[in-house]
Length: 274
Ligand code: NAD
Image 1 (spheres, rainbow, N blue to C red):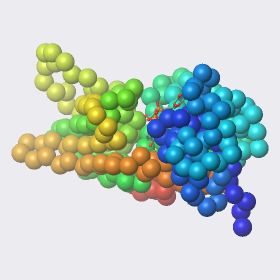
Image 2 (image 1 turned 30 degrees about the horizontal axis):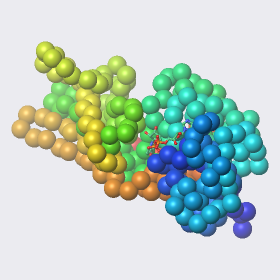
Image 3 (image 1 turned 120 degrees about the vertical axis):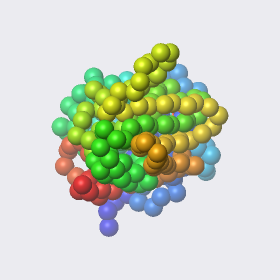
């Protein structure tokens, strides 16, 4: 039998960090090796278990990722783009698994993560849930079947009021799936904001609408609108542990893979779906 996988949670005091610590403590075959927070965080020195609302785990929250990654098998990272890039370099040095849920990464962050993936096994996805990844496959198929002349694609999302990036990583992932289905680049066809006298809708564009408020964990709809009919494909997340479960599944999946960059479609075996 495999030895337990030793995982580091970075962003340990965050919404996802606490959810991950709790789930790791409850999952056979996984152990919390270290918990990392930013310098100055009020959580430093606290027991990670207590922080996450479970019994003590004997792991004090630290702000030293270098020491934390030593002898670990993997890092689970739901933090910020700037810190994710730093963790990617350290995970590459340590040649371990790096599961990245952080959203809002810009092309320069992605390039650094690509470089790190020459040595680390990186799984990165804007959404770690089975449901959203399956939905992305369905959206790709629908976008391929419904031509741009007759069907307009719009992506609508709502999240809690603390979320700092927009559109959400999930909305972008779903938009990418639609663009792939159409054989176009999302960057060249997306409309992120509409305000004022915008003129009529440009054919073939993929529009995004962002709502923020309350404690909503994640609501997404992709609409295909035509003359006289509307198709809506949607996903609702009602519990954050959904993303944590997906991230832990990704970590165990990547454990024996070659260095490289993977997505949840690889983890879930959905990548071969046309
Ligand atoms: P959060 O703000 O509650 O938590 C982020 C934590 O990271 C904070 O505690 C912060 O102090 C910590 N942090 C920041 N810089 C750090 C550093 N250099 N070292 C260590 N810790 C550091 O946010 P959240 O709601 O947990 O979300 C975190 C990220 O995950 C966001 O980008 C969010 O969009 C994304 N997210 C992705 C998925 C997915 O399935 N891919 C799901 C939920 C959230």
